[in-house]
Length: 269
Ligand code: KIV
Image 1 (cartoon, protein in one colour):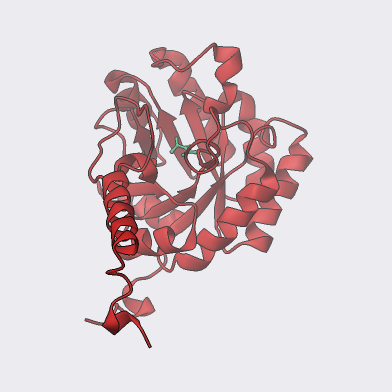
Image 2: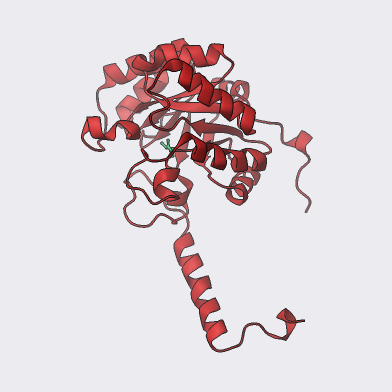
C-alpha cells in the first residue's frame, strides 16, 4: 500500500490544535530526536512531535535535562523537522535559554524557525514567563508553555514531585494563555489540578502525569517503547519492549557471526 498523499495528510498547525480542542477531540504528542523515529511517529498519526530537552537524559545519558545545549537541540530539531510531513514540531528551549534575557530567547526561537523545519518552541514556566511568551509570539514564534513540574528547575525545587497547588497552577496557565501561548503542557500534577487547568483555559492542554482530563497527552517515546534504561516515572505506560528487541537481535547476530552462519550464501556476492 502506498503512503497517503500530502493532500490527504494536511499539516497540523496551531489552528488545527485549537479546533481539535474546541471540537472535543484529543491530541497526541510524543518526543522525537532523530529522523527515522520522527518519520515513523509521523506516519502513525501523532499530532505533535516534541524535540524535548529530555534528550539530555534519554539520548545523551545525563542525569537531568540541564546539560543539553541550544546547538545540540538544533542538531536534533533539524532531523525531526525534515522527517515530519504532517505533525506540528515543537522544540524545547534548553536551560538556560528560556530564563536569560528575553532577546536571547527570541534569537533561539528564531534559529529554530530559520534553521530547522520545526514550527514552535516550548518553554518552562507560567506567570513569570508571561512577558517572554508575549515577546516571542509577537516576533512570530509560537510558544507552548510548560507548567507544573519543571525539570529545568529541579535544583531550586529540590527534586521531582507531584504538584498539587491548584490555584497557582491555574494562575500560571491563565497567564501563559493571556500572553499568547497556543497550548499549555502540564507536567506531574494531581488529576484535580489537570482538570482545573483544562477547564480554566481556552487553549489546548497537553498532560504528562496530569490525569485523563487534559486535551491531549504526551510521553517520552523512549519510555513508551521500553528503550529507557533504569527508572521510569509512575505516569509512563510502557507499550513495547524495544530494549529486549534490540538486545535479542544483537545476541542473535553475535551468535551467527561466532558460528559463521552469517553471512550466508544469499548475503554474499
Ligand atoms: O523534554 C521533554 O521530553 C518534555 C516532556 C515533559 C514531554 O518536556
